[in-house]
Image (cartoon, rainbow, N blue to C red; front, top):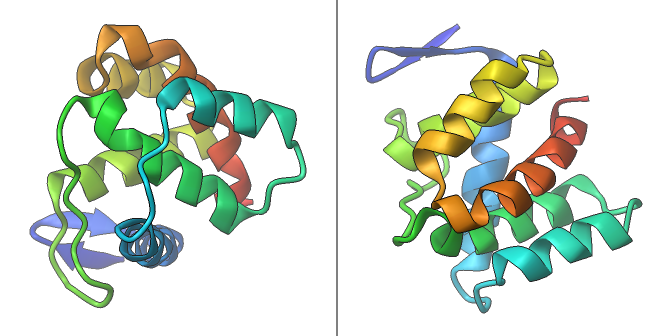
Length: 129
C-alpha cells in the first residue's frame, strides 16, 4: 500500500494511476471525444486494447463531468480529485461492486451523460484484469 494524501492505494491502483496519467498527458494534444461517440466506439470495437480504452474514456470525461479534468504528472505522490474518482470507479468495477459504480457515476457525471459514461466505464475492468 502506498499513501497519497492520506489515501491508500494498492500496487495495482498505482499502476492504473500511472497509466491514467500517461493517457491524460497524451490526450491533452488530442481533440476531446463526445461521450455518446465514445460509447459507440467502445461498443463497436470489443477488441480495443487497454490504452485505447483508457484514452477514449479520459478524452470524453470533461464533457461527462461538465468541467475540465485535472491529472497530475506521472510519479507525483499526490492525487487529484479526478484521479481518485477514476481509480475508485475502476476498482469498484473490478470487484463487481456495482452499488459503488452507480454512486460514483451518479455523483460525478452530468445526468445526460450517466448512461453512456457507465457503459464505457464497464469496459474498464479490462485494465485491471
